[in-house]
Image (tube, rainbow, N blue to C red):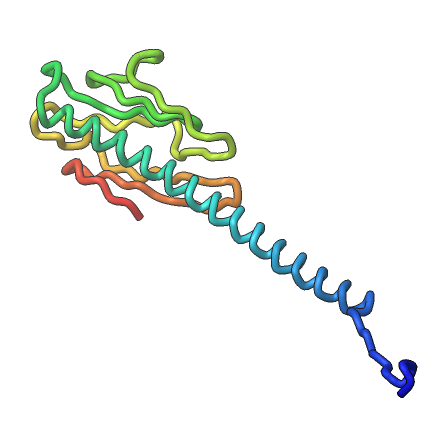
Length: 150
């Protein structure tokens, strides 16, 4: 019996097959990265909307509780939100929160004042939050002081 009769066929993957697999894995990874980035921006926009809503609720709650025996309000600038005490916003007073870069509020330079004890708003208004991809969220306040997220 000859040892040369045993022919073992060792076959590996060709360069083309390996390149195809690496290409497919790369495309899947890119899709995941893009999806993750979009989800991250969505969460950031939701966080800004929650900040606006919480500021309005904080001012309304303080007014309805009669804190400081004053009205309470929220001032909206394009890049910040300020919760303040009194019936008029005075620059530099109150608790300010800055919006993340690339996010904006409209209308800017607007205040919502909640009346002491009744917590009614001085006027109805809607605030539009715009994110980096031009996606928007809206928070509205009616004259009764109710806050709605749209």
